[in-house]
Length: 312
Length: 255
Image (cartoon, rainbow over all chains, first blue to last red; front, side):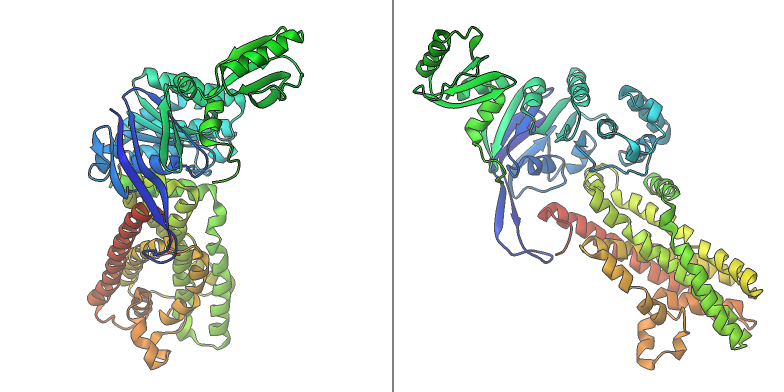
């Protein structure tokens, strides 16, 4: 098991001073989670759900308040040194980069912090730059890179210590679609190499595409852990119908919600009976392209977590 | 040691790409002109050594507060501090290396001051005890590295570190006897000067430039080094405590 978290709680105190005494805020509330070896596992949840706090605890940046967390068989409190040499952390966006260093210098710096001596560090740096398509830009300043290229530097940095577990925190933030597609391909390659990947994301398509299993977290608790497709089936609260039409179906009993994207109408219904009623209505009105479809991960997410919008 | 050297190398890489970080060097000429103008106008050749030492040591302090001390705050802003905390290598060794690299550059104001004195005023001070002078300079750079680590770890706790660092200019120049020898200060301030290593540095370097014999070189060097070691240990302990507290509380800053 790469990650074993049991009844993990993490609270923070508001206020000032060396030991703040203000109100307590709970970020993780008795969270339990297992991530087997060689799995790509997604952590999904709204802002403030506790995803990043969990990643920080697993990467030994933060201590738990109570409960236990083991990474690759080592406790995050007592075995932090062992964990650090076996994991990689990949941020998204601008965080965690030195804009005034080149890609090569960045990797050499972090290689030293991962206790890799000079000759192997040079070789490893060259290998990662080549793998991530950065060889031609290896001696350019990171600040001159596009967002996608910066993300590749992040990835190379995260891989410098040849980690068995990689923690990705919002890795595709701000990436263009091409860069995001390349990133997903790389995730697959990393899994094929036997690594375990834990990834926090808001991107449901990404989670659906790359994750073997996903965990939905809200208010520091696990709502569900399943494969993206399994989660959709388990949650099965609603049935969905898709059709190429602009007809109004909101008056049909059992229709909960509708949305239209690129000319495609998606209808959320309460149950099979309501879905059949919608199908019948559409067919009766001459619509020929119509399907009953399983819910997408995004639908399940919205069902379980709710449309909290900007609320955190 | 490898981590320390990696820090040194990385800081040189960073400085080479950020020449604006060396702005302290641009303030030196103004101090040189001010100090030497006063001394030359007053026809006091006996104070030339003071006029040369002031910009040199002010420059050294400027590098400490303007650049070395901000290394850790910069790490906090870029989130590289978090990544460093999660790395298997001892992050404080890297940071100490980076601070040391800056402080080695802190010797540049010495050459700049000497050059400007010669070019602008045609004056070059005599150094009658060069070995003592250079030993004092080396001890001062070491002590400044320790002091910078202590200040850097302290500034990590503050959200307004620049305000504190700006404050730490004239009070230190005055109390350390860099601008005015400590014995000219009000008597009640003088004990305070003794805990600032720069006061020992300034006095010993002045004596090293003077004709007469230098008394107590050994223990005066020891005082500079000892204060540097105390600051280094204090900085290391404070940094460790700050990072431990960050792991416990999830915040680095104090308020």
